[in-house]
Image 1 (tube, protein in one colour):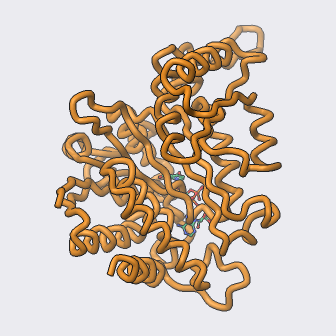
Image 2 (tube, protein in one colour; image 1 turned 60 degrees about the vertical axis):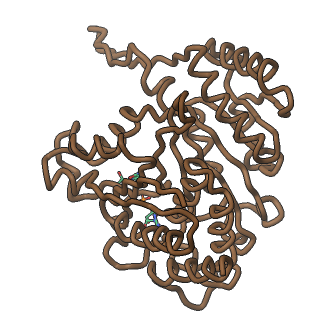
Length: 370
Ligand code: NAD
């Protein structure tokens, strides 16, 4: 049985509450002989600032670098609203993304049939939806230089951001999307704005060449980002894997997320470059939601996004796709049985706590693996 080093960063607010449920699943997988996990824990965000005045310490950064995967809860909260900008809670997450060079953000949008009525779209549009948005995470307009506000001296100011992509950045995110598609329904939709942006022209050109050269077996199409936004709410099931840049990915993945209902349901993965020798990638897995200060400490947070993020870790970092499938099926079964946390209550008569939901998923998983 293989052993993997997990570095857990529960963070603030509901982060530690939902992380506890992941620890139970990891312990069970050890008992069941699927894989064993060496677990270490660290501080990130507000709690790290309280402990050592930084959003993540050098020691914990080194532990993140040494781990096979980082599992991240959530950071932030009103308590730290006025701390200096460079040590604010979010700086811990940004440092992790930057230092681990996590350039590919994977956000699945899955709609469980049991929750189809919670969406703002009609049931037939989103029931059984399963798409994957692959967003470039370390380049583009959020990082391009110059990035500044200039005083023009005539009572006017000018704000400048720079959208910039090099060939290698487009190729490496493209490869992640094509590889994923091969394991799914074999289709990639690449999205940009080549009608008005030079970076879009290059994106289109590089993706087309990559497709032709390395992935001719995968079906590929291009869609302008504005049109893709429209198609996402019109008929999302036409997509399998969508690959796009940092800015469009930010918006399109949030739209896709809301197709499926609550923030408490959405997992994500951020991956770095594959090590040429081992094929291993640096990786961080986290729920899409934040620290939810409004419900922190009440034991009512939905742990499904966090558990789903751990399932992604098993699939993408450790090749344990079968165990990941079983966890996701256990989640679907628990939802189908009618169990609900408060955020996905819908018409349910009652709701369960974080622990009860986590343990129900675990019990279902035990049954499936018995
Ligand atoms: P949020 O995601 O924390 O909460 C938005 C709403 O969704 C809240 O009503 C919350 O109760 C609910 N919610 C979120 N996750 C839930 C869950 N698992 N179960 C049940 N309900 C859930 O976003 P916000 O309120 O905008 O931000 C709160 C804090 O979190 C801020 O400090 C923000 O900066 C931070 N934040 C952190 C991350 C991160 O760590 N990656 C992401 C987003 C926001």
